[in-house]
Amino acid sequence: MERHENLGPAEKTIQALLQHLDHMVHNRPGLVVADARTAVGVRWEPVTTVKEGDQTVVYKLIKNGPKVEIEQGDKVVKVRGTKVGNLWADNTIRVDRRKVADYRPAGIFPEVALWAYNQVAEVWKLDNEFAAKWASYAFGQEHRDLKVVLAAFMMVQSRKGDPVRENGEVLFNDDDYRDVGEAMCLITKGRYLNAKQLMRVHDILVLPEIAAVNRELGFSRSARNPALGRWPKAVKSWLRYREQNPQLLEGLVKSGFKGTVKALARRSHYKPESQKFFETLGWKQSQSSDGRRKVAIGVEMKAAESWDGKTEAQVCEIIEGTRPSWKVIVSRVPTSVGITRAIMAAAVEAGCLSDKDLIIATPTLEDLGLLKVQGVQERWQAAVQSAEDQRAANIARNVKNKGTKEVLQDGADKAVQKAVEEVVKDMQVYVFVDVSASMQGAIEQAKSHIEKFLQGFPLERLHVAVFNTNGREVTLRHASKAGVQQAFRGIQAGGGTDYGAGVRALRQYLPGEDEDSFFLFIGDEVAQPFQAAVEGSGLRPVAFGLVPVFTPMFGRGDAVRRTANALGVPCFEIDEATFEDPYAIPRTLRNLIAATPVGQTTDGQRRAPRLTLVETILQQDLLQKPAWAA
Image (cartoon, rainbow, N blue to C red; front, top):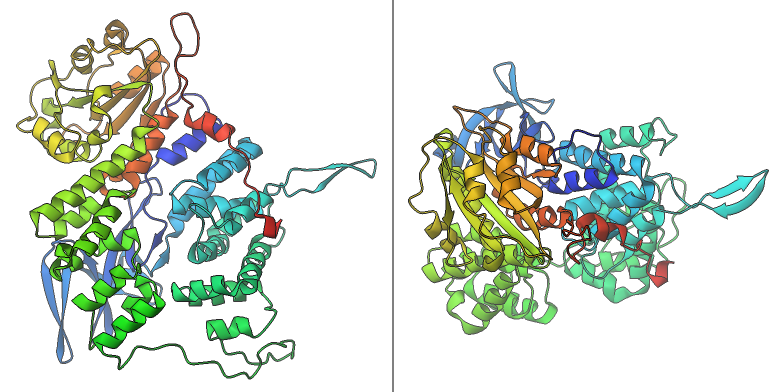
């Protein structure tokens, strides 16, 4: 969001929500190189390692990249990518002795975690209560990484209900915002934090970079130990509740969280009430050197369940009888059997795959011919139609059947539409696409961005124009990727640049008296400001959105941002990288529109009854711990 003045807590929150970040956790190894274009200053890319003699060689994985065959003893390893260099003991990747990148094992991406944590810290420093309300609001959203960071921060921040005294007398107790962090970890309804995410809160707090921030903020007095705040207490409550409700603990084991529950118990120093806790987890106990342990010492635990040696029919029986999670099934199916048609069908029919699992497994379902089976097909279609992100569009690239591709793409389109359905009420949206000569070489990139989000807006509220020195309206005949592609087919870059021409092309679509208008620009901004064209159009935008497209020859200008400043309206910027992240597009689009301020009518009254993102956060009640943990 472009501003000249200092940002307040609300603006900083919006900035954090609209900024595209890489995923905070990567479940595979990667390399990290400097990249000033990203918010965190570095870029992560997936890699694999291969032993070549006494060296560990790192290969960067590239989708549809060149295939490399490497001999390893008596077998050949195939890698699709390019060689980067050798992995050294200090986790650097080097060519000869020259460092070319840093190697990162699977796990938390520290730079992203630190950036996000600092955004929360900046908001908290300006307004403690707003930060707590933001955390309470975020709990109900699907952005898991942000929720984990907010929970971690609220666990350790310094407003924790301390008594306020005067002349030695306790007058009252301060607000306890650590309760919000506890509630985020303990509530088990809606989009709650699962066991793995609860562990991730701990893993963030013990990062040296995060521990240093907490010391600077005065959240920790220890120069050596990281601040954990209420995390141990919250986890002990979480574990105690599940121990006292055995079916919940058994459900965690069935879902593949056995190792995570053990880790939570260790890190929080949890003391179970009975040996049943250890038996459920199959966790053998031995006495400590100081003899303090009293439960399940020396008790033989039943061996962990194994499916080794089981036949396909036996595996299907187990699946139908116990309904384990898909993660457990994949980890236990014997290599000699593999995921067969019968096993996959049994897993789908038993409800072992979540909606997300089903979408990801689409190529496998197709290869096994299960998408032609009515029951499986219906379950799969329901999963695709309820998707909250655009992963289905990415999966569509890996399937062969045209009908399957269309269902997946339709699901991705609906995910965007659902994201903006509520927030776009009482608003007209105007989209302007730069097709001038300065966009030569970047116009296809701009089209690629557009076809991932434009179909999300209701057609009756959407107006689109392309412009160079002249502007013309572009009509979408259908709210879908196909509809967007058809509308922009044959449009190429050429001519001069006049952003005002694009605005004038849509000036006949005046917003109603009770409606706001929002301008969204896609281009390189290499032009002059166009304040007069906006003021003369009568479209009265309350905010600008900007998808900046960097062109190799012309770089990037500032026409949109300068015009926004001249008009006194905010300019929200969307990072191009957002459009490569299927999780980020619906979320960012919704936040972008929700952040748009509400305008006024000609008589000075508030224009629309909608609530902005900031108003929604301000009206949010602080989270309360569940009754069993209060």
